[in-house]
Image (tube, rainbow, N blue to C red; front, side, top):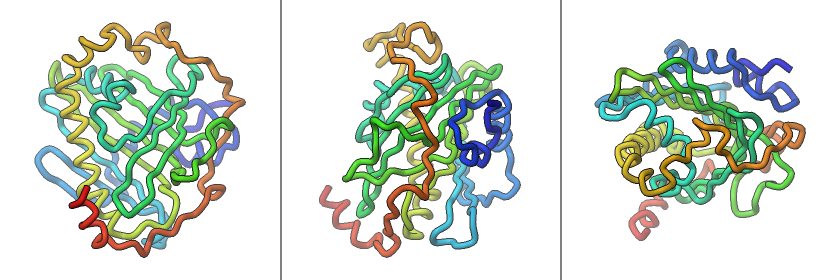
Length: 276
């Protein structure tokens, strides 16, 4: 198989494919393009755009793109932080559980991630095929949803679908980089409008700032936690079992349970947030 080049190709191809160089180039291009995107947030080195796919505002899928300038963060550190699962458990307050399931190639693996959603929404989880590639002084990490028989949807979670999500890290010298986050996700279920608005105005910028802060503390943390172990840079270090691509299949959104949360109001969450 040649690998899919766009998120649509990925989801329409029935067999699971590992992205090739063309897929990475196309992802990088979409990160830089502003055509068809609406600017929703632009403050102090942070810009957010959204794109609505499908006519029905309430039920349609949304793409979000968030770009942040990081003045004191080398691109290499950003790349390490986004890869390091152990460190993510420390800095990512939204994470419930995250772990690697197995590797596919030297630069592709499969992993599980579950996260807390703003109340009163149910928490979400995903299983994704993740692949990464250094491109000159830039780095790309991207993923899309797959199914694995040993990790079916859980009763207390909503299984979300990443159609294509990823990060582009661009180096601007030894201590300066730009991080672009691009997400095309089906969170499953009809989400209320306030969630979508809040995601682009508040949640995405907040999450990006957390990543940037985590980068500043990574060097010191890594010195105390297996400093030489970076399997994303040195694939021979990996302890993950190799899993054949044939064990995976495409996770289609329409095969999952649909949750209607569109009537939940944000008001009822305020007291809950205050009492947290």
